[in-house]
Image (tube, rainbow, N blue to C red; front, side, top):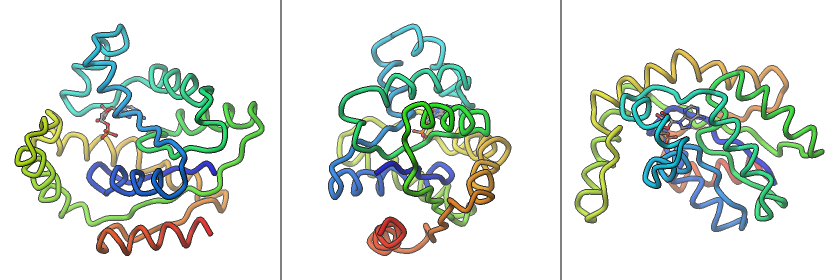
Length: 192
Ligand code: AMP
């Protein structure tokens, strides 16, 4: 089962992806997590990506497409995966189409978590507070000002990705403002 989770930062993609991993035993491929790991490890990709990520911008299509191309070739991705945070531009969606076609892979679903953007800053402040309380590191880009830039990047470059799939009849919209369990149930219904 291969699926894509779409939605702005703070929509709950990571939370829902973790539940899908548990239920379906397929890996979550989060380009954000992979980029943060590259930054932490100081790899050439990490060095290139760090400043853009810290500022809330989008890392180049070339870099993230390369990361995903490598990742879906790994053994654990054979039976399926959840794409979280990718594709974020139409160029990335087109590149993904080519990669999947080459591997004779088909998407089961593309799910958009639709949320009220005016509520997202509050959510992100909560996410940072919870991380702090749990003694976990707080993401630099969860700072409210940087978060606003991430939201702008979403509305400028990523909001067009859902219509890209909608035109092909592949998109399911889920209300991401509902309680977490209700969102999970709606996603499972879309996958059934
Ligand atoms: P995320 O964890 O998905 O919110 O991603 C954190 C940051 O990583 C984003 O704000 C971008 O700077 C970068 N990033 C993650 N995925 C992508 C992508 N598909 N395209 C471009 N930049 C990305």
